[in-house]
Image (cartoon, rainbow, N blue to C red):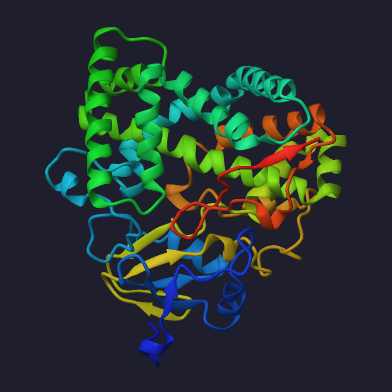
Length: 413
């Protein structure tokens, strides 16, 4: 095992997240670090905690598949970047979600959920997705060719409607869920997080009790049934955590991925024209957009449960690790000419936007299908779509957001 020859001095430890000159491109320093110091120490701006930052694709693949690194959010070394109310976990008010579990517990919980997200199940949802997208675009067109915000009219409603239908959520509960999700990806206060989490947990326990008494064909009813068939391995608290995983994973990342994807298409007209003329490239185009415009850059984190070497650097037990996914997805060792958007790129599907290893996103097949339907339909139905304001006037989300995105995407045609 290789020992560190020079531990980083205080002046060498960079504040994280790194500064960006351009809000829709990775920090320039990622490229420098990837070549000169691919495993480097950083200090989180949120809480001053130190962690290791990985900027090379190969190192991230190795670490994410290494069982010596865990996802336990309650570990003192975990690189926490928002005010998660850990006391709710300690008090048993909420249970960890799949994001913060490790095998064998993670495996047991994931097996209850995954039958809802198979390729066959997702493909069966495609016609309904197409209906929703067409209805939303109809409403956009009815507003006329003046400036229309595609976040409000398209990218926010699509995942919201589909998730609500999949889980059969009562209409009067959606505002609570989306307020909770918004806190998950921003730096809200501990009190705000605690209040929203407690409200969501109470509501989900009520829904689980109702579906046990009157089961339907929705996802909540299905995981309750599947859990019962397996001997009731999971508690109601565990089932609630699975539902929270679906709601959180199915909304904010998807919304922002769709928004930034459309922005990228509108700023790369030659690739947009290619996809419009060849919609059969839809799946490959989604992969390339996820690689090129990775919206969740530094939310993939781990903590070492024993000493381990990554990229020639010794990471000690209890030290946190952050994956700079945007740096990995622009690594020239993994992707030729990585700063070019290319819908013919064959290796685009190897990107790390959905993670890697046993924590690879459970809902990736659903998200990819939704994006494929949205992008190809939008380009076909509104071929003259363009930005309504200069790029520099767009309201990009600031560094306090754990997921990149736009507050609004004004367009015209």
